[in-house]
Amino acid sequence: MKYILDSCALLSYILGEKEALVMKDLLLNSKNTFYLNYINYGEIIFTLGKKGLQEKKLEVVKDNLKLYLGIKFVQTDNFEVVEMAANYKIDGGLSYFDALILASSKKYNLKIITKDKEFKKFSSEFDILFL
Image 1 (cartoon, one colour):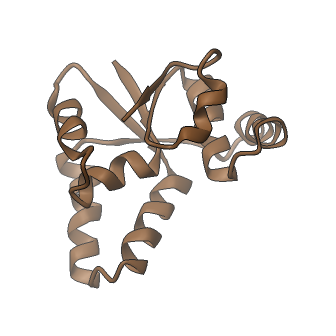
Image 2: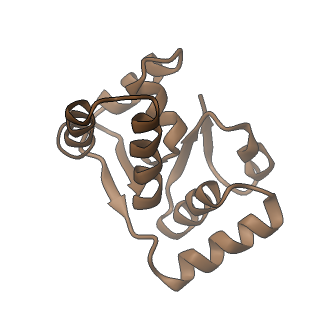
């Protein structure tokens, strides 16, 4: 299965929250491929930094995301994705970060993994795994 990760889903794994075991099982399944957009990657780094992770620990997290977990990055710097995200933001009252996940999911045909209940209103249109 091909998934796009909402930052809250990946943060639950990194921070050892209650959903971490579900995320670990998904991440370790070799049949799964994971994608993240650069904007949400920045959101993860910002959140971890705000929680006081030292710079050395942040570097370890960055390396783990790219190298060990094999997370691939999707492009969000094209007009189609940006316009789709803007429309989802207008229609759904989501944060722009979440709207970019919807647009990336649509553009690249990816299932969304999230903890964010704001995505529920899009569950009939998108394939979403709620943690």
